[in-house]
Amino acid sequence: MRHKKSTVNRSFRVADQIQRDVAELIRDLKDPRLGMVTINSVEVSPDYAHAQVYFSVLVGDATETAAALNEAAGFLRNGLFKRLSIHTVPTLHFHFDKTTERAADLSALISRANATRAKED
Image (cartoon, rainbow, N blue to C red):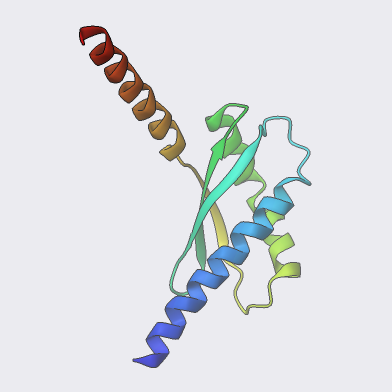
């Protein structure tokens, strides 16, 4: 049982390190389609073959940014080879994370509901 727990912790540590390293490596990309990108989270498969990288964009188009990041995935993975000391460096798959957009929409809805309630009172 102890082995299983350490494997899970290692997976989290590897994902966390990939998140930090990819965020740094993205700064070196010269693609004009990239806006202000934030890496929100990384999920690594149990065999470390694939990593799902979730990002948000402060400035720029999410679809274009996703295309640019997925095209640069090989370059970014190569950069990870040099930084990570693990046997298998995962293939990177980038996905736009809509969490921040949803949070902003919910916040706006709550504000509108509170404003409406204040007018009624």
